Length: 225
Image (cartoon, rainbow, N blue to C red; front, side):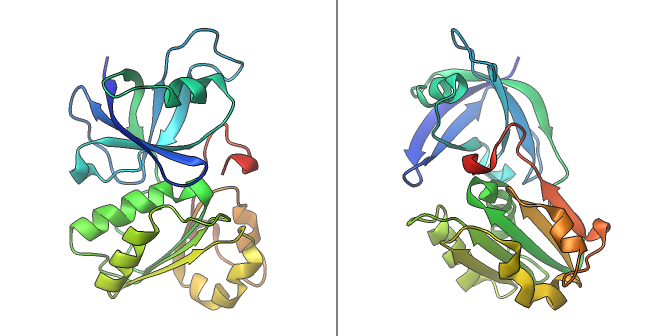
């Protein structure tokens, strides 16, 4: 069984925590994919002892980074109580379709709150190899005073001409993207967070289903983002 041993834990803002783990054996994944982890603990609540998390790290980093919001569940309490050197279990290998892929057109990524994690991993991987080769735009909505990863995003946007990043300290609403409707009709749209893709199939967007790639966080309510 593959285990993940905690090496570092730090706060990203007043509610989000980043945890970094070293796997007991090398793992292979594509930036943006997810894993299922198990944090054994006594008296787990109805949610159980396992959860799905996006790997918020690029493969070249060689570590597993998870980002979670503080909460009352027994699982989160067990996860956040870990000390460096303690381990959790990998319940399945990395999987998921929210990855960069071989698309040659414009990519537009829209994230809300902790939904930023797959896009952070994808852009970190792209930055490692010289930046996106085609136009890429990120819209990051996070209604708090501090935007996690904002400094890295700003650095990448300044370095790579094909990358545009909008960090917005507001709650996401699809109406905020109406001015980009014409651009979106020519792009691949990635969504990550408590947002419905259906809105983008209707006017004024009129996207086709095949243009939309959506990441869902199993077990998350909208307030968890």
